[in-house]
Image 1 (spheres, rainbow, N blue to C red):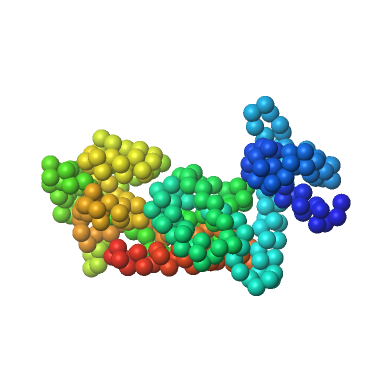
Image 2 (image 1 turned 135 degrees about the vertical axis):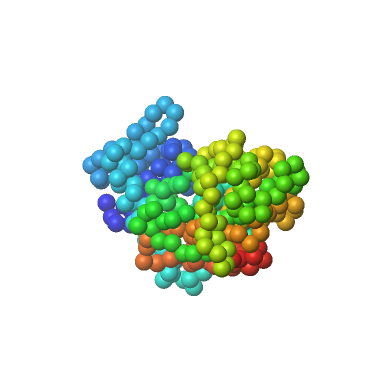
Length: 304
């Protein structure tokens, strides 16, 4: 089998793995089911290994298939980036796959897509909005937008904007229970905690004062930040959330910030992408647009 033909079959296999079925891959690739099946069989024959296990409901990768898939995605990403870097006029083009949390996607990714489309008409964007931390290589993703420490040293990160948490509550809650003036006052309030495990100690800093840590508690806790957010909107208590998730509610008056002047440090908003020698023009262009938008917003929101 020639090298180019082999790469084409590898690309088909990667799409099969992402779609979870031969028919799904065929639809996405614009090929017939017979052609996709033939290319998979040809690749398996060339490798001398079975790559997929077919069940009545869904296709899954074999152990050999999973190992090959991880390496294949790296090869395909490198090839695509290299081709874009040296081919033609270097304009951004192709499919860009982005993942982030559902809340961040709605609040910050969706609003820039029209402008990005106007700037880069040859790029198609697929946004996977999920609170699950996806494996970029395994799932064939180009970028993840995250606000957490980088756990995988094989990935690269680019900081897009600062991040900080603010304590806030619904006006109704504050009318009934009063407004805390210092972090220590939180001990007398219903605090909505979340995380896995729930974060029951909140840290605060302000200029000219030492850091403060306070133990908080309340009747409501969740492993999901959006549950905590919605509970706060309903007046259930005080929540500590990233400014990027509550900015709209603060501006609209649905939430009110408490402990003015106190910030809770958090990991910056960053773009995470597979380590590669070349950053594709489509990826660079998207990060430039998103980064510029977030930096302007950070200044507007009172960047500490």
